[in-house]
Image (cartoon, rainbow, N blue to C red; front, side, top):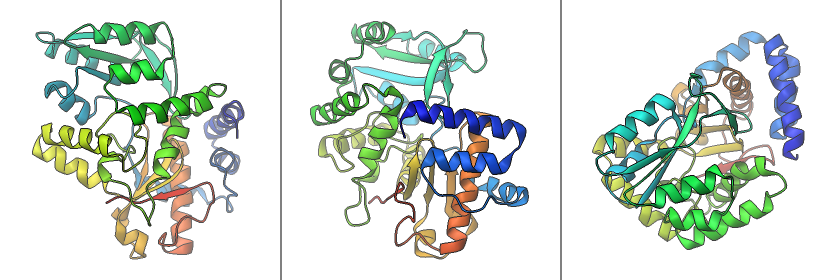
Length: 324
């Protein structure tokens, strides 16, 4: 499905959610993620799936790894995306003695398509990107992105991303040139497709959590250069934060499309079901979170029907990703 079609589907999904028309919303979700849906659950069953929701990849607020990169001088330029305006101001003040910190113009995020549009700074939902460096790199990248000049290779060099990963992301950008909304999803899917049961990815390169360590999409889930960067970031993090990141990033991922994915423990994948073994991603936006609750009901239905994901997902559009 092209993203211009997906915008229409998401419009129908939001409209059905506002009307509490759950059968229509259920079918719209199926269109969005490319799944032939089972019969719509009852509202009681939909509510029962809500406890599966966990904020895992929220696109809101500073990530622990970003702060470690900034405070540990791991990179010359750190780009912190999707910060609430007050949080960005606080971070800028905290590094003012050593770094130039430049905020982007404020924007609001569409938490289904993951696109942004301009917003007033006073809007409580407004976010900014903060560019921080000790030299002029922050201003260079700030100016380039403020003018909407897309140059992934130049941006990648400024951000000290490994050349192999720059090449892979530049290819993603080229493929999505006429369908820009597809970029995040395509890049995610490319990385996750290299983390399989037969060839697990390195957990330090798992991009599907606020705990992610590198801030870019690696060329594969086992890229040695990206692993080296991730290990440096991990070493700069407080011990408790590093341990929490490892626990989250080692969880297998069932991925359909951003922002619809779930993570599991190996017990659930093996068929021994415990209530805390499954977590479905939840966004801070109410409409997106309700759509993700519908997705949680689909995941719960799949697991109650099949009992396990050990043999892989039932739907051809889904990826089951493993880490070691």
